[in-house]
Length: 597
Image (cartoon, rainbow, N blue to C red):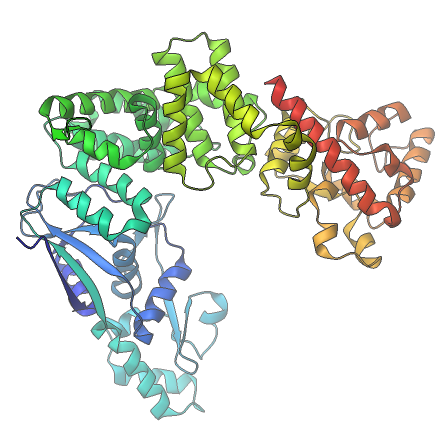
């Protein structure tokens, strides 16, 4: 039996399927995550006749749709949602949900003179050379003749034949071909999963999360469809508190389920530090209860897969759904969730901009739930191990590569060896003396403020309540929360005037948080000059550059900010020596901070 067929369809046919509802979007779908520029690039590729990848559809009468109906006779979209959504936004003109669950309009503009596409903005809107919105032309809402007439009226010097040719080419976008892989209607979801993973190897992480959502969304026997709603609704409530009214008004069935009682607190909850997506929700729940990291394993377990006997057994499916239900409820439980976030903040990671890896937080939450709920470990120990794991995994970039495999390895090793032994093993492997004395010092030699080591340094400052540079009372943590100023210790313009390039003057070792007024008053003076002023002001009791009122407090402030005391006499001639000295002090602070957790 042929499991799928591959063929080409013109965009126009695809759009007719969308308009008529013949392409059915199942309950698994996530919001539109493409940036508007990618929509533009898709339209440009179609215009140029470049391939735009395959859309994968599947006829299956048993998949439940967003409107609650079954998808009998319709094409269920399995892969290609972002491309389909891009076409509906740019050509059909439909509003789409962005990643924050807000409805937005995406308008793509076209310049027939140079055949360029852009996302509509104010400059384009005010330029007669641009057609502001391509969708009425491609969508047959206005004729080519009218489009040409309007364009020539705004651009009388343009070559009318050229404009006609290019507007016709624009309209032909709907005749361009898109590849369709249509999976046979007789296939079950497990076979579809296998086919899809083989076709789309590069997208396995995201695709497998989607397939878990698809698997549970199509299951009513185990309340999988309501599990899917719990995940989706919780993630939406994190960013859109008003959505709770939509649930109450439009989904009475879910409102009466225990899952709603588990998540409804988030309609009043505050969570800017950790904004989980459905993938994060699934990952934490799966890693915590199943002690695995690969989503493909979860699809198999929900299908009843016995990994040892290589058979499918109903008892395993039943147990897996129950396990998943329990773990999802534990994830969304208000006490668990809020206590974990308090634990994260207690490390000094008080802002999402200090957290470079969401998967470090995901794994740490899974570890927290495992140690607290399954292992019944005392709270003090749970906090110690979870804090250590979170900071270490961020510091070494543990999940920056193949996250699935790393998560799988880590949770299995913790299961096998115990958390204490495995963390000791990781510290011996990754946090040796060489790491603290050389590797970390080297990692801080960067101009990127998204650097793992620099972010952990800032967390260490927040953790111990460090006062901001040249401030008597303002803390670094307050400035980070208020999006305060990062100041160049050796002022940028001072270094530029002395021949230093951006790579050097923007080194993170030259950065420190300070109050804006201090930053402005230092201006472009050399450190030796502005510190002379500071000393005179302290002596005279004038608080202009700084609020610090004694020289001993000044020296204490410099030490607290890991600034070598030689700064008091430094000019640009000492700048590179200063950077190395400060990197060493920063690395030492990070080490002391880590071992204090």
